[in-house]
Image (spheres, one colour):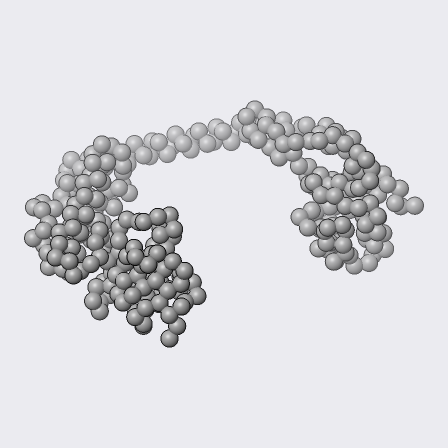
Length: 306
């Protein structure tokens, strides 16, 4: 039986399978029914020999939050109560946990009545009421639930408030859709302007200018062209692509000759890069895709055809 496990994920699944008394990996370990983050902060615990799990409804740190994600996945098949305290041996555990449920419900109810939340908030409230009642039923502590428990959002006034919230949310979503459509229309106009400037920008790049990305009418566009272009650097000692890669002239010429002769070029090395293939008239080198028409244009500039 391995007690030093391979990963955090495995620790949580072995604990949930309940096939051994202890085990751990890194900053997660379990002892008996309880699983811990950093060896001391209890994240969840099985209740006796049942499939009931008390899951701690807060966290210790950002790392512990990640640990808790592994735990939640491992107990997805169990009945889980999200509570404040896990130690079932403590006399006041049920008082504390019922009080925690009541506190969560009051927080949700306050937000709902203030008009800050809608349908999802309402459904979450009903879910917590259901969970709290099941907790009280299982642990035989119904007397701890206050009178009219969970009825704050179940009356006619609450339903009317919910209806207004849903209508308000629908209006807000419609306005957001309209704003987005208007923005996309403005972007389309700006894109047309940007595309109209491509020939000018391409000519400038081939002359040796640095063409950077920029904005038109408040919209950002990448300075790239329709496909990878080739030019000599200002010093005319190396080939530069429009995507910012540099290739030795000699290697470029050898690759061109290989393409023209019909030889396979897959695996051909050009400087730091390796050819992936030449298919349907397109040379693929790393992330670059260079059409044969651009290769022929550049070869003519370099007099490689002779």
